[in-house]
Length: 272
Image 1 (tube, helix red, strand yellow):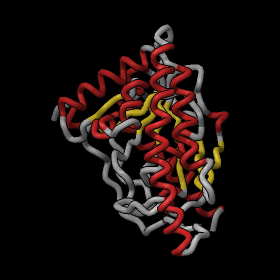
Image 2: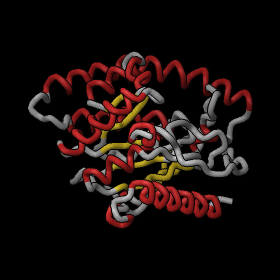
Image 3: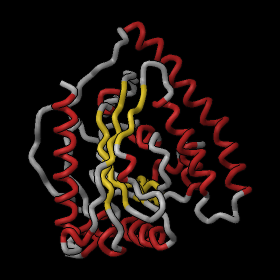
Image 4: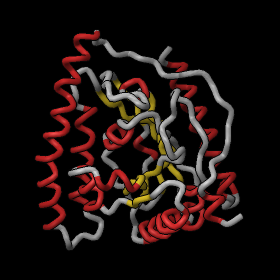
Protein backbone atom coordinates (compact mmCIF):
# COMPACT_ATOMS: atom_id res chain seq x y z
CA UNK A 1 0.00 0.00 0.00
CA UNK A 2 1.39 3.43 -0.95
CA UNK A 3 2.22 6.12 1.59
CA UNK A 4 -0.61 8.26 0.19
CA UNK A 5 -3.13 5.49 0.76
CA UNK A 6 -1.82 5.11 4.29
CA UNK A 7 -2.04 8.84 4.98
CA UNK A 8 -5.60 8.95 3.63
CA UNK A 9 -6.86 6.13 5.84
CA UNK A 10 -8.14 6.97 9.32
CA UNK A 11 -7.61 4.88 12.43
CA UNK A 12 -10.86 3.20 13.48
CA UNK A 13 -12.23 3.47 17.01
CA UNK A 14 -15.42 2.29 18.64
CA UNK A 15 -18.57 4.39 18.82
CA UNK A 16 -19.87 6.07 21.98
CA UNK A 17 -22.99 7.83 23.21
CA UNK A 18 -23.91 11.35 22.17
CA UNK A 19 -21.95 13.78 24.35
CA UNK A 20 -23.36 17.11 23.18
CA UNK A 21 -24.91 19.19 25.94
CA UNK A 22 -27.24 22.00 24.90
CA UNK A 23 -26.97 25.01 27.24
CA UNK A 24 -28.79 27.48 25.01
CA UNK A 25 -31.05 29.81 27.01
CA UNK A 26 -33.31 30.87 24.13
CA UNK A 27 -36.73 29.41 23.47
CA UNK A 28 -38.20 28.62 20.03
CA UNK A 29 -39.28 32.19 19.28
CA UNK A 30 -35.99 33.61 20.50
CA UNK A 31 -34.05 31.15 18.36
CA UNK A 32 -36.13 31.99 15.32
CA UNK A 33 -35.45 35.71 15.75
CA UNK A 34 -31.78 35.12 16.56
CA UNK A 35 -31.20 33.10 13.38
CA UNK A 36 -33.23 35.53 11.29
CA UNK A 37 -30.70 38.21 12.30
CA UNK A 38 -27.51 36.14 12.63
CA UNK A 39 -27.31 34.62 9.15
CA UNK A 40 -28.03 37.83 7.18
CA UNK A 41 -25.49 39.66 9.37
CA UNK A 42 -22.86 37.00 8.67
CA UNK A 43 -23.45 37.09 4.92
CA UNK A 44 -23.52 40.87 4.60
CA UNK A 45 -20.59 41.49 6.97
CA UNK A 46 -18.42 38.97 5.11
CA UNK A 47 -18.85 41.00 1.95
CA UNK A 48 -17.82 44.23 3.70
CA UNK A 49 -15.02 42.75 5.80
CA UNK A 50 -13.34 41.09 2.83
CA UNK A 51 -12.20 44.40 1.36
CA UNK A 52 -10.03 45.45 4.35
CA UNK A 53 -8.48 41.97 4.12
CA UNK A 54 -7.72 42.53 0.44
CA UNK A 55 -6.22 45.94 1.26
CA UNK A 56 -3.98 44.41 3.95
CA UNK A 57 -2.87 41.73 1.49
CA UNK A 58 -1.97 44.36 -1.09
CA UNK A 59 0.08 46.56 1.26
CA UNK A 60 1.98 43.75 3.01
CA UNK A 61 3.75 42.14 0.05
CA UNK A 62 6.98 42.76 1.95
CA UNK A 63 5.90 40.24 4.62
CA UNK A 64 5.77 36.64 3.29
CA UNK A 65 3.89 35.57 6.43
CA UNK A 66 1.16 38.24 6.03
CA UNK A 67 0.99 38.75 9.78
CA UNK A 68 -1.31 41.78 9.65
CA UNK A 69 -3.74 39.90 7.45
CA UNK A 70 -3.60 36.82 9.68
CA UNK A 71 -4.37 38.89 12.78
CA UNK A 72 -7.22 40.70 11.04
CA UNK A 73 -8.64 37.39 9.83
CA UNK A 74 -8.59 35.95 13.33
CA UNK A 75 -10.66 38.85 14.69
CA UNK A 76 -12.97 38.75 11.68
CA UNK A 77 -13.68 35.05 12.16
CA UNK A 78 -13.77 35.02 15.96
CA UNK A 79 -16.25 37.85 16.36
CA UNK A 80 -19.11 35.77 14.89
CA UNK A 81 -18.97 33.56 17.97
CA UNK A 82 -16.87 35.27 20.64
CA UNK A 83 -18.81 38.54 20.43
CA UNK A 84 -22.23 37.19 19.46
CA UNK A 85 -25.12 37.79 21.89
CA UNK A 86 -25.79 34.83 24.21
CA UNK A 87 -22.54 33.21 22.99
CA UNK A 88 -18.87 33.42 23.93
CA UNK A 89 -15.57 31.59 23.64
CA UNK A 90 -13.42 30.73 26.64
CA UNK A 91 -9.79 30.07 25.73
CA UNK A 92 -7.54 28.13 28.10
CA UNK A 93 -3.93 26.95 27.90
CA UNK A 94 -2.48 29.61 25.62
CA UNK A 95 0.82 29.12 27.45
CA UNK A 96 1.13 25.84 25.51
CA UNK A 97 1.08 27.61 22.13
CA UNK A 98 4.17 28.02 19.98
CA UNK A 99 3.64 31.41 18.28
CA UNK A 100 7.35 32.00 17.72
CA UNK A 101 8.18 28.73 15.96
CA UNK A 102 6.39 26.39 13.59
CA UNK A 103 4.16 23.64 14.93
CA UNK A 104 1.08 21.70 13.91
CA UNK A 105 -2.10 22.46 15.82
CA UNK A 106 -4.62 19.61 15.68
CA UNK A 107 -8.24 20.28 16.63
CA UNK A 108 -11.22 17.99 17.21
CA UNK A 109 -14.11 18.72 14.87
CA UNK A 110 -17.67 19.00 16.23
CA UNK A 111 -19.21 21.74 14.11
CA UNK A 112 -18.75 24.26 11.31
CA UNK A 113 -18.27 26.91 14.01
CA UNK A 114 -15.13 25.18 15.35
CA UNK A 115 -13.09 27.43 13.05
CA UNK A 116 -14.68 30.52 14.59
CA UNK A 117 -13.93 29.22 18.08
CA UNK A 118 -10.27 28.48 17.28
CA UNK A 119 -9.86 31.90 15.70
CA UNK A 120 -10.50 33.29 19.20
CA UNK A 121 -7.00 32.12 20.18
CA UNK A 122 -5.61 34.76 17.77
CA UNK A 123 -2.61 32.53 17.11
CA UNK A 124 -0.67 32.64 13.82
CA UNK A 125 -1.28 29.54 11.70
CA UNK A 126 -2.52 28.41 8.30
CA UNK A 127 -5.57 26.18 8.03
CA UNK A 128 -5.50 22.97 6.02
CA UNK A 129 -9.03 22.88 4.63
CA UNK A 130 -11.10 21.13 2.00
CA UNK A 131 -10.79 22.86 -1.35
CA UNK A 132 -14.53 23.54 -1.64
CA UNK A 133 -14.24 26.12 1.14
CA UNK A 134 -11.81 28.20 -0.94
CA UNK A 135 -14.54 28.96 -3.48
CA UNK A 136 -17.04 30.37 -0.98
CA UNK A 137 -17.43 34.07 -1.82
CA UNK A 138 -15.44 36.43 0.40
CA UNK A 139 -14.59 33.91 3.16
CA UNK A 140 -13.02 31.46 0.72
CA UNK A 141 -11.30 34.21 -1.21
CA UNK A 142 -9.73 35.37 2.05
CA UNK A 143 -8.42 31.84 2.55
CA UNK A 144 -6.51 32.20 -0.72
CA UNK A 145 -5.13 35.56 0.41
CA UNK A 146 -3.88 34.03 3.65
CA UNK A 147 -2.15 31.17 1.86
CA UNK A 148 -4.13 28.36 3.50
CA UNK A 149 -3.54 24.83 2.22
CA UNK A 150 -6.36 23.27 0.14
CA UNK A 151 -7.21 19.57 0.15
CA UNK A 152 -9.66 17.49 -1.86
CA UNK A 153 -10.56 14.66 0.48
CA UNK A 154 -10.13 11.15 -0.88
CA UNK A 155 -8.29 12.35 -4.01
CA UNK A 156 -4.71 11.10 -3.88
CA UNK A 157 -3.10 13.73 -6.16
CA UNK A 158 -4.62 16.44 -3.96
CA UNK A 159 -3.35 14.70 -0.83
CA UNK A 160 0.13 14.65 -2.35
CA UNK A 161 -0.06 18.37 -3.15
CA UNK A 162 -1.32 19.07 0.38
CA UNK A 163 1.61 17.17 1.91
CA UNK A 164 4.14 19.02 -0.25
CA UNK A 165 2.53 22.38 0.51
CA UNK A 166 2.40 21.63 4.24
CA UNK A 167 6.08 20.70 4.34
CA UNK A 168 6.94 23.87 2.44
CA UNK A 169 4.86 26.05 4.77
CA UNK A 170 6.61 24.57 7.82
CA UNK A 171 9.99 25.16 6.17
CA UNK A 172 9.00 28.80 5.70
CA UNK A 173 8.25 29.16 9.41
CA UNK A 174 4.46 28.90 9.30
CA UNK A 175 2.39 26.82 11.70
CA UNK A 176 -0.48 24.69 10.44
CA UNK A 177 -3.92 24.00 11.91
CA UNK A 178 -5.61 20.73 11.00
CA UNK A 179 -8.77 18.77 11.80
CA UNK A 180 -7.29 15.24 11.95
CA UNK A 181 -10.76 13.68 11.97
CA UNK A 182 -11.34 15.10 8.50
CA UNK A 183 -15.06 15.62 9.10
CA UNK A 184 -17.41 16.68 11.87
CA UNK A 185 -18.30 14.30 14.66
CA UNK A 186 -22.04 13.46 14.69
CA UNK A 187 -22.19 13.12 18.49
CA UNK A 188 -19.35 15.18 19.98
CA UNK A 189 -17.02 12.21 20.44
CA UNK A 190 -13.66 11.90 18.76
CA UNK A 191 -13.81 9.88 15.57
CA UNK A 192 -11.02 8.41 13.48
CA UNK A 193 -7.79 10.38 13.08
CA UNK A 194 -6.00 10.54 9.75
CA UNK A 195 -2.21 10.31 9.75
CA UNK A 196 -1.35 13.24 7.49
CA UNK A 197 -0.77 15.93 10.14
CA UNK A 198 1.35 13.59 12.24
CA UNK A 199 3.41 12.35 9.28
CA UNK A 200 4.20 15.95 8.33
CA UNK A 201 5.15 16.80 11.92
CA UNK A 202 7.56 13.85 12.16
CA UNK A 203 9.18 14.69 8.81
CA UNK A 204 9.93 18.24 9.92
CA UNK A 205 10.41 17.48 13.64
CA UNK A 206 7.91 20.09 14.77
CA UNK A 207 5.66 19.69 17.83
CA UNK A 208 2.01 18.79 17.73
CA UNK A 209 -0.10 21.14 19.89
CA UNK A 210 -3.50 19.53 20.55
CA UNK A 211 -6.51 21.84 20.79
CA UNK A 212 -9.72 20.53 22.32
CA UNK A 213 -12.95 22.30 21.41
CA UNK A 214 -16.09 21.62 23.41
CA UNK A 215 -19.61 23.05 23.14
CA UNK A 216 -19.60 23.88 19.44
CA UNK A 217 -21.47 20.69 18.57
CA UNK A 218 -24.50 22.04 20.42
CA UNK A 219 -24.19 25.50 18.84
CA UNK A 220 -24.50 24.20 15.28
CA UNK A 221 -25.09 20.51 14.80
CA UNK A 222 -24.02 18.56 11.75
CA UNK A 223 -26.60 18.75 8.92
CA UNK A 224 -28.31 21.69 10.63
CA UNK A 225 -28.32 25.45 10.00
CA UNK A 226 -29.91 26.41 13.33
CA UNK A 227 -27.55 28.42 15.56
CA UNK A 228 -28.14 27.76 19.27
CA UNK A 229 -25.92 30.40 20.95
CA UNK A 230 -23.97 29.40 24.06
CA UNK A 231 -20.44 29.32 25.37
CA UNK A 232 -17.74 27.30 23.63
CA UNK A 233 -14.49 26.20 25.24
CA UNK A 234 -11.12 26.06 23.46
CA UNK A 235 -8.38 24.39 25.49
CA UNK A 236 -4.77 24.06 24.31
CA UNK A 237 -2.89 21.05 25.68
CA UNK A 238 0.87 20.74 26.21
CA UNK A 239 2.87 20.22 23.03
CA UNK A 240 3.93 16.71 22.06
CA UNK A 241 7.21 16.35 20.15
CA UNK A 242 7.75 13.58 17.59
CA UNK A 243 10.73 12.19 19.50
CA UNK A 244 8.38 11.23 22.33
CA UNK A 245 7.12 8.44 20.07
CA UNK A 246 10.40 7.71 18.30
CA UNK A 247 9.30 9.69 15.21
CA UNK A 248 6.63 7.07 14.54
CA UNK A 249 3.67 9.02 13.14
CA UNK A 250 1.17 6.28 14.00
CA UNK A 251 2.24 6.27 17.63
CA UNK A 252 2.23 10.07 17.63
CA UNK A 253 -1.32 10.09 16.25
CA UNK A 254 -2.50 7.61 18.87
CA UNK A 255 -0.80 9.49 21.73
CA UNK A 256 -2.31 12.81 20.66
CA UNK A 257 -5.76 11.28 20.27
CA UNK A 258 -5.56 9.64 23.70
CA UNK A 259 -4.60 12.94 25.38
CA UNK A 260 -7.37 14.81 23.58
CA UNK A 261 -9.91 12.17 24.56
CA UNK A 262 -8.76 12.40 28.17
CA UNK A 263 -9.02 16.21 28.10
CA UNK A 264 -12.54 16.02 26.66
CA UNK A 265 -13.56 13.60 29.40
CA UNK A 266 -12.15 15.93 32.09
CA UNK A 267 -13.97 18.92 30.60
CA UNK A 268 -17.26 17.02 30.53
CA UNK A 269 -16.89 15.79 34.08
CA UNK A 270 -16.41 19.39 35.17
CA UNK A 271 -19.51 20.71 33.39
CA UNK A 272 -22.06 18.10 34.48
